[in-house]
Length: 399
Image 1 (cartoon, helix red, strand yellow):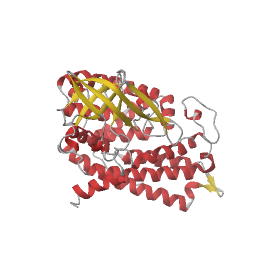
Image 2 (tube, helix red, strand yellow):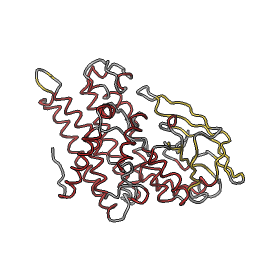
Image 3 (cartoon, one colour):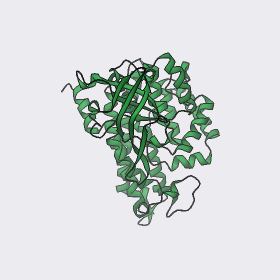
Image 4 (cartoon, helix red, strand yellow):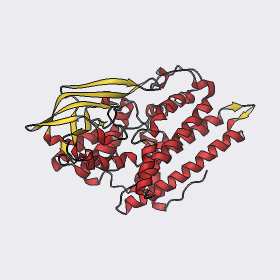
């Protein structure tokens, strides 16, 4: 496998991260990471891992040091992600640490930052995202959920859909319509809403894999203080675009390396026609093809990181990485299903629970089919691949 070369100081940083992971990553957390089947980790393991990172001061590598971040460079943050993937750490709830937090740092008031950021860091607040609606997904600006002014509050009515882990969240950041005048983007505001507020109802959506990860959230006369608005009224679209850059800036090569390493390790243990699957030319060709794609994506990610390091933003490269990364990750999931063969057929949700040791077939095959089914959404979530290509055509190619 071809690997990029890094400076000596980055090698030292990588060694420091590895030493930390060697000492803090328990067998239970490794099992949880190994059984992860989607972007979202089950809540108990996610909270446990975040608590360890929080104690170390590493819960929010992307945040400035003054707000509880690490002070790491973009390259160091990237290395940290690579090593976490290599070690198979559990995921953490991403909407607060990776999206809402950076958005508040960039657009929130001092009072909002002082109140929310410590709670995001500690894990007291678990956030979900209220963007998509029935009929308003990739065309997000057409959203209908309304927020009507009533003194010091807004009264919110409407519904959000595909809301990941809303059933485990106590806060939601949401786009709402505060005006119907002018262009549709001009009448949108950005609100922070307590999920315990009367009038909020959560209805489960069962995904392809059969688990409850998605939801539809209903708002029925939900009262939200105006101090919970981020940015000016009717200027929420600018806040949302800023936040989406964090969602769409994919480090797909990190996850792709994890999936490839898992596939190669399992292939070494799999016999086909009297020899190890890794010795089969056809299978080896598929692995090599994905290795090449992973390296190409990694190089593009490094170019984006160089832009960030120099004070810029990922910009349009976010859309390139989002589209290409999502499609390549789906290829890796397809390879996993091919590897699992008939061991991927039994549905074994209990076997994916940490500490559950009764299952059919080799344990390493358990997450392969659920991962394949869950991750069909990769080319839709955060803006479909078709929409990403429209963005690329306009902003990069000038079409």
